Structure formats: structure tokens, C-alpha cells
Length: 299
Image (cartoon, rainbow, N blue to C red; front, side):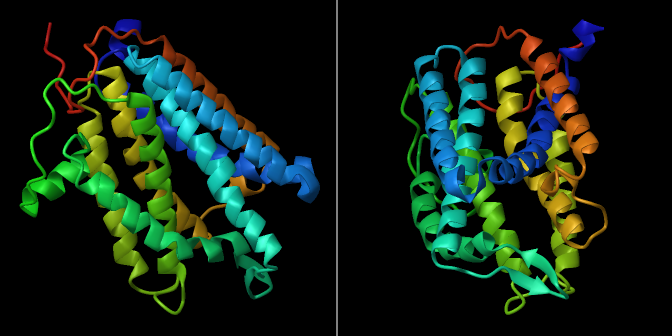
């Protein structure tokens, strides 16, 4: 049984589920953090959380020879940095500037911090220039752009040793940031609005994109590569969850963890179970190989 789980498609499935479940838990953690620490200490706790994230990334840098450990530490470090420093910085300035929540029919549809977040689009796009034209990139999306838009950026440096932890951390931050902005801008009624007809093809796009990525992910046989590919796959898939939740198709239990304690604990238990199984997978792969899906040969 264990031998079967170490093969495709299970490696990709576990990687996907691990990242997907953490998206919901991240929302619950932010809500609980505000409840537990209150307005007086929540921002200090967020600052410490970001420092912990940075420490995890640095730990991954020191363990760069262990690709699995560097990947894990980069992912969790990037998640902590986003939740602690990025998201709570918007919460702080929403409070500091007394920005009001967006209310419709006496219900909060967009919190104040998310009304501020789209203002960072210029910083996102300008810093992405560095990653887009980076000749050392192994990102499938950037490579696709280079090929199809005929953008030669030069050949990668021979025997270039990637810093896995920082790459995974920045991938996590940038993907989360990018899709936050995408949806928040789409929800803006002066642009589209969550009830606009264009949201249906947007949802369909995310579903098709997710299925395509999942189909590729199921073919991965390398643990660390599957995990890295699982990050964008799960974050893109999460956008379908966000849109359907915005339409009240289901109850987003993770944004009210104190009310739906049992459901959130079930999600947490599922996350821990998947994480333990995934962590027990041994890795014999050579470090720094291309992140491409491979088919496990028949024995």
C-alpha cells in the first residue's frame, strides 16, 4: 500500500491537497489571530509571524542541499510572510486611515483591507519584471511566455544552483498576491462586480485551468517538484472556491472558525494527515532537476 502511495498520481494529489487545505486554514488563522490578540496586540503578533516566516525561509536556505526540506520551509515561510507582513499591513492601514468596509444590504461584502490591496498593483507588476526576464527561471508559466511571445532572455547559467527556499517563498507570496488582486479588481462594481456576467467565463477559465494543471500534476514522480507545482495548482483552484463562496453557493466556514469549530477542526485534521503522509515519502531524486512532470515507468 505504501509503495503505491509513493507513485503518481498520489504524489501530485497529496501535494495539491496540502496546499489547498492550507488556503482555508490561513483564512481561519487570520480571523482567530484577530480574535485572540485583539486590536491592541494583533499587529505585534503579525509582525512576529512574518519574522518566523523569514526565519523558516533562511532555515531552508541553509538546508538547500536537502531539496525537500528547502521546498517545505520555503512554502511555509512564504505563507507566514504573506499572512503576517503582507495581509496584516493592509489591515493596519485600513484601521489607521479609518477605511470603511464595503457594505451591501447590511452585510460586509469586502473588508476595508481588501479595498486597499488593489492599490499595490503597480508594485506587483513592476517587481514581476525581474522574474519575467530572469534567464535562470524554471517557472513553467514564464517559460511558456518566453517561447510563445518570442522573448529570448538568454541561456541559463551552466550548473547554476538555485536557492530553492527563497524561490518557493516568493512564488507563494506572488501567486497569492496576484490572484488576490485579480479577484478584488474583478469584484469592483466600477470595473465588473461579482454579479457581472463576465464572472461566469472567469470562473470557467479557472476551472479549466485547474483541471489542466491537475492533469499535469498527477504525472509527477518527484516529491519536491510535485510540491512546487502543487502550489500554483492549488492557489489557482482556490479561486473557484473564492468565487463560489462570494456567490454564497456554500458557507465559507474558514472565515467564521469560532462559529464552525467542528468543520475547521476537520479541515485541520485532514491537513495534518496529508502533511504527515507526504512528509514520510522518501526522496532519492537528484537536486535541482527541472520541474517537469514525468511518468513513472512500469515495473
